[in-house]
Image 1 (cartoon, helix red, strand yellow):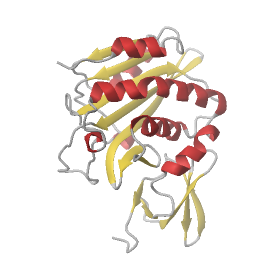
Image 2: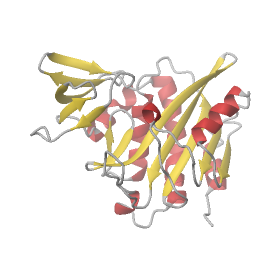
Image 3: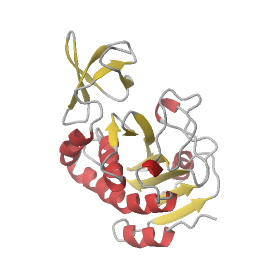
Length: 254
């Protein structure tokens, strides 16, 4: 049986987020999908929803995310949010999660956590409107223990490589309150307070890249609004998360 620190997390977060609740489910299709359903059904209280196992978890662009009980951490945070500008939120979340877990983690724009050149986890952000208020659902999935790389385009990494004694409940404890504080800071100040920290964690900076449309270039950091800058043969190109995916490549192009 997994012992989740639900009460400790509630005590840390409730003063920041009135009406906040923590819920742990043994299994569900997707924590993001469930919280989006609740918001659309006008059940929009701030919630941290943890699933020990997800049967239909989703990543960016609809890609499936696999997570098994004890071997991974899968949770979503739903809360009202009204920033002046939404751009850069996934980067701010990534900075917060990486810093909460280990200094060796890096961020692959726009929403993945990597250890060296292997993917350790991902972030999925969705929004929904309820009456005149906008709500955000932030889903996070992390590999806690080693997993098979069969069928994956990127070899997986696990948090146990960096923190052998850290289990899913401890990782959640480390992330939850800092995440809420970061999202609230983003609401008031946007991406700007997180940009320098993202630069320090940017996996793609100064690396040869290939975009999904075939464009090749070199990573040149991000703009103030979180857009990826890529130096190409025809000049600087700005890339937003809605346009293309990005893959680092070896200098030889392999």
